[in-house]
Length: 231
Image (cartoon, rainbow, N blue to C red):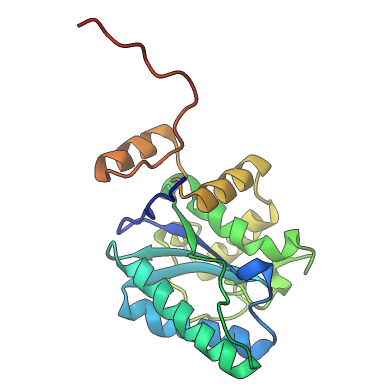
């Protein structure tokens, strides 16, 4: 079955997953992590992409980003991906592809799933058993939102600012949100939607999206096609 064209719309948050080829490691040491983040910091303003959250795992990474244009996110990912592969291959004496094909992404319904998606991203190292607390993982955006460090790569989404009237209040509220975890149903939905390219949201959100694009935004419902009409 042919893969659907990627669903990308400006002004809406997108959850992105990029995996290493055959699940191989895409980072060897600290310098590799820092190089990828540096490439993102350079490319984001060039292509009009606001990065809200990220996590760099051993063999893949997640982003939550809002592009200004329909082409901004694909251009950003292409520029970062190509530059990082050249760097990684040169530094580690290898050749060939590093990525498992093109990146996967989904549109996120802002009011319903944006903060949930941020927590989902931040909790990846916890689910993987790499740390017991998201605040202890150095290669994610959680430290910024928890008030542990400033990360110039990030553009906090307006929903984060609404968590409190002061930096301390916002940080405390966000830490509690992440500590509360993500429901299994939401976790599964976000993963499947991203890997399959469907939008993540309720029926009204999906209906409004469908009006903005000719590409299907949700999985077709199973069932028989309607019977032919006599009229």
